[in-house]
Image (tube, rainbow, N blue to C red; front, side, top):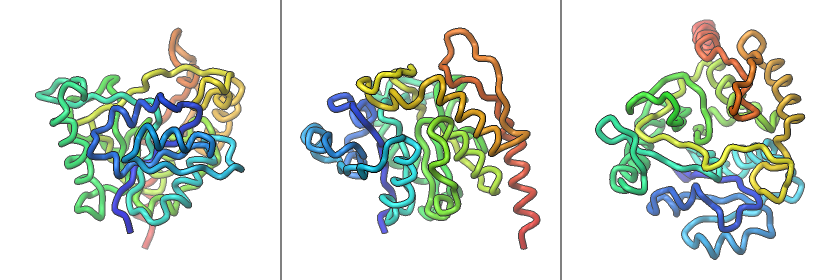
Amino acid sequence: MEPTRYYIPTRGRVGKQETVKNLPRGLHPLVTIVCPQEEVGEHRRDWPEVQVVAQPSTIQTIGTKREWILRDLADSVEFAWMLDDDLKFKVCVDGRFLSSAKYPDEFAQAMMTNLPALWAPDGGDYGVVGIGTSYFAPKGGIKENYHLGFAFGFCREVRNKLKLGRLDVFEDIDYTLQCLRAGYTIAVTYDVTVDQVSASVSDDPADGGVAGERTLQTIRENLDRLIGYHPGIVSEKPRRPGAHPAAITKVLWQRAAKEGRMLSKEEP
């Protein structure tokens, strides 16, 4: 059983693997890029220390791709991470968020020592761990029972209980709420933060990533399904001018966590 692995689902971004480029080199042997078959060779040439795996040809959406990774590819991994392919990082040093590239030693310490210490069975307390974004971030430490965003991981027990592949947009919210409502405590770290290099919605598959999948129509359809899965917890809110097109959800995280705590008390 492999203790930990970091999976990066990607498409159409050969030569533009921002997450791999920005991670500590010491983590590269634990990273797996998952891509279409025709991109495997070029990714292997670009990143010789990184494992590269071709996704099944039947997979057409990011939701089903994540499901296959977490359910099948990570079957022999105890704690499996899911990272977006376009992430940049900051590390908290003396209460300030600073560029990970300018503070590589502190960043490597946070990613390779502090982060693994959070999860069980490596001595930590959490079966679900995420990395927070820099927006309104506390100055380091852990925030419990909060949103899993661009970078998150699950232990085997949690993965086996998740309903995967049912959304292609808002799947991170769905995963978070499933964990909370099942009674799991989530740890989101702010010793390191992540943000996307770009956060646009495109209808052109040539742009790579999830372009062509997360259109305004699919956002609308998936939001309706998300609200149906978590009634009373998720609702729609107006999008602020200039905000990402998918920034239209209002989520009652603590209500979901309370539901999970009540469920845990009822179980024998």
